[in-house]
Image (cartoon, rainbow, N blue to C red; front, side, top):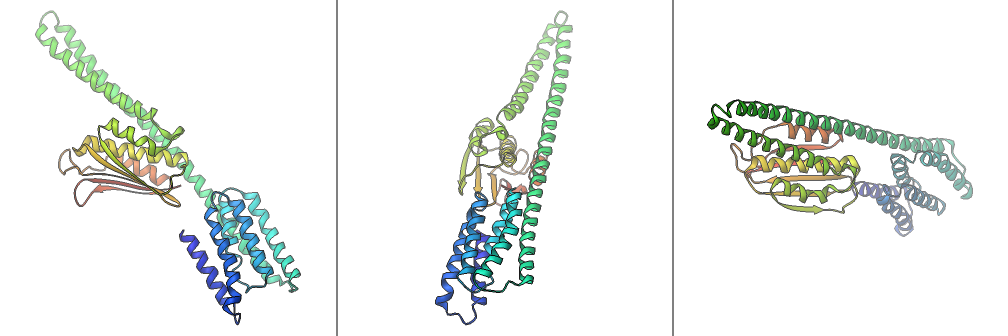
Length: 346
């Protein structure tokens, strides 16, 4: 929306500046044509080629109708950038000589003498738009690669956690079981506490393994919606969660969807483990180019309360968000409790 406002201001300002002695009534139709092309930019990410065609047609119509020259290429340049950014490289590259040719043909049709310097300037601007669009697409792909690496590192962390859990718990079970066997005949009264310890340790190990495996099975990276998975996360954490969703819900890229899910998962798990409360709030906002997720609780301060240090969970969330080019913060709230917030590009 901000971009559309800027383009609209450039278009209107350009029409006014280039109008000279042309009365307002004569400038208005030209401004309407270019503002309609600007409005079409709203769909530049979903239908880049269609928007490119619409803006090109508007520029040619404006030019042929003899309105003051200057602002007519602006919507088309933005649409050309969006086409290249969307990965439609061949169409974007082909549009450059085609656009220059249309300008030349329009000059001839309008009885104007084509100026070589103007054509070179137009071509340079269009080539720059394609180049910047390709650069943006390349950076986005790099972020995706980094996100995949972060996911691989997280899988390694999960495997390491499972190993550490099993190694520790099975060792304790083996030691206590051995002690119970040795004492079952000579000191049976001492064997029973050892067996009780075995039962408790085995139960703890099973709960930790189920928690990890449940998180893996519920991973929405293979499909699904992170927003829809939050209630199940809350149930596993034993929490009553109030969820608020704002904006137009759209399908998220798999890496962004997985990151959103992981943030909700880790933040709600932290509330269940540390906050000492049974309620939390999740806010999800679909913005034009980003998605925001915020997890809030009102746990008290002190041991087991809302003041959680920068443990591995928060570090992992921060690394995942940073790898996707987003922003992350986590810390105590001024009025008590804890806040986890992330903003991810989509």
